[in-house]
Image 1 (cartoon, rainbow, N blue to C red):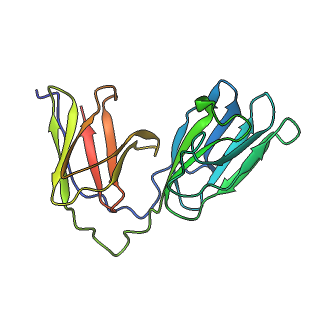
Image 2 (spheres, rainbow, N blue to C red; image 1 turned 90 degrees about the vertical axis):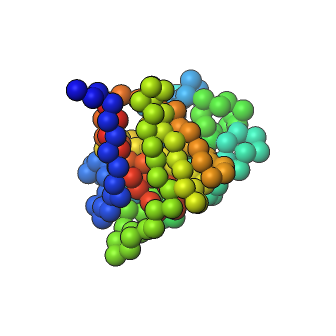
Image 3 (cartoon, rainbow, N blue to C red; image 1 turned 180 degrees about the vertical axis):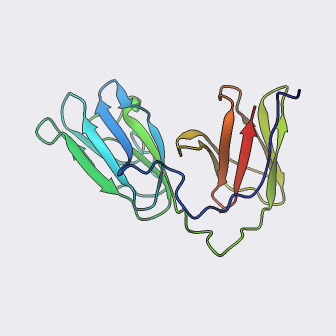
Length: 199
């Protein structure tokens, strides 16, 4: 029995792949870092929650640390001991970097939101100008094609971000050795989504 399989195909899904709960992503902010993770994938218009986890006020603002601009501007959201919860929604797809403005050098509180529009491909079939291939020996994906996206994200079936990569050139190798067996979706910022079964 072959234990390393990969199945590929365009995924044209109109419904969100994220959980159906009202809050799509939640970040507890404390000096030791963001919990449960510093990254999340959400859909356009989803509710994002910030929770005060201790220390001084935490104005979560655009960018990473001191001078690293966010690809897409993130509006400031502040949590404090007196206002321990804050919510926001993002209406533009893109990658959003944010950090705590009180201590911008604390990289523990640098976060990333990948905001996708699940309806952008409805009625359209993006032309796949790239395809992934699987190397079971090294547990890595290679992307080859005439035009690669500038960024790809690998998300699990719950919509949780597993890994993301910024790409340069006409081919790329993506290491996935630490990922558990399962079904994933490889999303390019060019609108192409590929379903992968990593076993």
